[in-house]
Image (cartoon, rainbow, N blue to C red; front, side, top):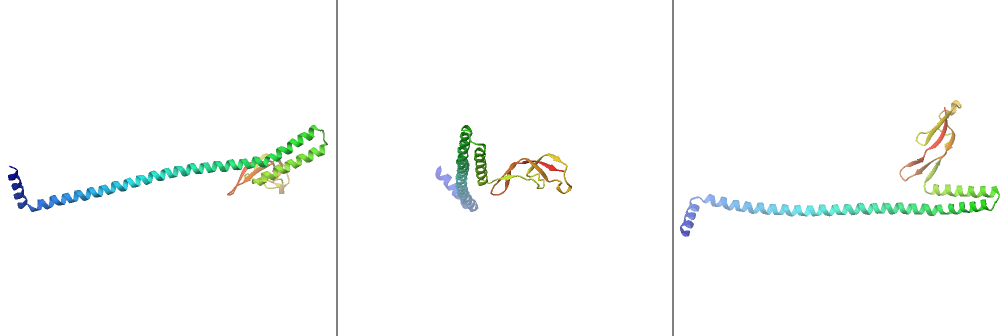
Length: 186
């Protein structure tokens, strides 16, 4: 019976040669489609792998830069403290002088020296005093505590500084640390 079926199929194939070509083409198309699909899956796997590696690399970069930033801050803080240690030494010497009942002039000189050293350290770190006596009032740098009557040519000028202000000169811009508290002529 099998031989009869094979013969019938061959007869059919001889009667319809187009069907054979179509079947062969479909098989070829299926093979091409499968090959293309396998290629796309491979590309997708490669892109996913690349994406995961980039994500991991970026996470490592963020961790590394955060660690570097913290190290930089720690180093800056450490240097500031090292620079302030001589001032502590000077204050201790001044306290010893007070205990030994030295003259007021000697104590005054010691504290002037301490004050000057401290200002020099602040200046070294980019801190600048805001002491605006007789300067025009600037809302960006000054805080008006009160106003007083004054000459017409001194209107909106700082008459008195109640408390000095300070600003920090960063690389790209100055930042006000404390506004100068002032009295302004009206």
